[in-house]
Length: 389
Image (cartoon, rainbow, N blue to C red; front, side, top):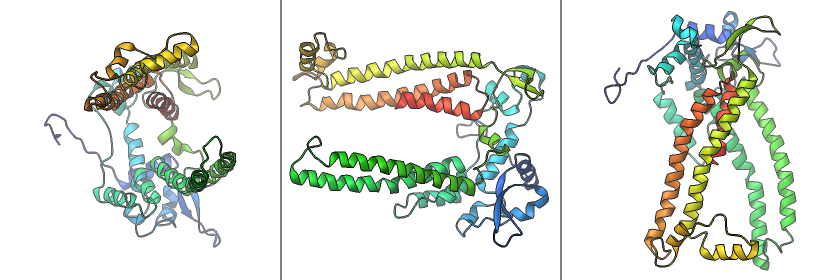
């Protein structure tokens, strides 16, 4: 079908239940399975077509609300169907010899490289999405973590599980801090003179240790419940080899099998170059932030004079041309409405540079040629975190 502007095309793809089950068996999808033991009703097991009846309508966590996220057989969740189908689409080989010679083994990566395909993504199921959104926005109840897992997958569900867990546990130091604050205000103490400040630090230290341990337990419990605890072939879906990974074919000195190899030293060299590129991009927003601080009066001529008297040399962050704009009677005088101009421009510039660097980060991370999806994601997240934080 045609896109909104009439030029783009949308191609809808679908599959059959039998193909999904076959793919689930190939990747060894971990799901709840019935047992013959009366004491242990179910265990987590690799899906098998031969024993598929043991996987149908077996999950004890399925209630009337979460049942809607499963297929008609009660076998696969919406997230599992998308995950399996994505794997099937990404594994379609490129039959053209030219594309194979360019290390584009798979059709989707080849079409994306050539510009014929912009994105491959699943279509939303409106009523399920609205159900999750409605329950998530209800601040009187916990977020529907199980429903989120069934629809969006484990990665997104773990984020909401973490936020729900941390928001509850953070009440403990918050309550203690409130009591100490009230006592401090009543006695007229400051942070430096209050004798309860060390006590708060010690309590927070023990709280953080216990918090971390309990989250590890919660995380392990959810991971086992969702079938993502053990490292299996299913990890290929998220943490396996990237379709765009390029290298030379050689025989593995360890297994003796043919494999695609890329020199780690070359990748380290590329990562070093990426680091330098990221640093160059980071210099610009740092300079702009300093200039905006001058234009807002946070760094003034008085600061520069005091610095020179104390240190014996000029203030390194003081720029007279911009600092003078915030002086009384100038364009960004604090008594004028124009003083808000730098305040508005700064977040706009930061957002613009973040958007620009995100594209650069994707390009240089792709250029690093990571073999595993996990390594690619870690490298990309590290770049964006360092830049945007």
